Length: 323
Image (cartoon, rainbow, N blue to C red):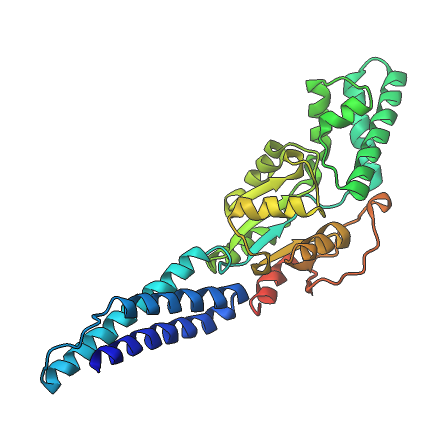
């Protein structure tokens, strides 16, 4: 009689613990709910099956009480272990938010043209006509590559632009091009305290940026501004085959930070098409910071709304605190 009671208590208690854990986890991830209930129920069955199949010898009521207490404690331990195991297996899905901040914001068309003039001027120091022709070809090649980003989400690098424009690679010219952009690379003064506040909450932070520039440039500028170490990972499309809003680019960022459930992530960006539609397309939430001058040739109309809009980066911690 008591053996049957032990089996019943074991199975019921394990399932109850799993159900309670599942209800808690359901708030985090619906998939976790089913996983924990299944895990706990399985453990309950295993525990019940391994209890003795013969009636125990006669014991006093006190002995029976002790046995029931021990069995209940064992079931509780097994049930908790089941939930802990489920937490470990689903750790990425049930993890903290993954915040992605743009490393580079939109730049006006005139800046791109002027940047290539800087490159061509250093490439043809003594020949203004050749410099002007090279600058024109470089700018046209750059526009063509950005059109590929807009229409096909194909990533590209500076080397691709040089090849398309039939312009040779030159270290001094590349330095001039890079130096032209430096004044536009300084981080928003509100970024560092905002990032520090989010890290203090235990959130993981990352960057995903569509850019032809090498990672070393971006990371040098972030290090200069004292924010590089605040990120768990940085992903630049110059190292990828695809740019935003292609799902592959967003998944590469998720992998870099070690998060598997996009529903637990929020992407913060300044472009409705690349950032908001791209993030929501893979299941992330999205916050729009509409303060960039996006070139007309890079704009794409979208029928999608962000989950939040902020005018200042300093407003982000309060916005997502409710999520």
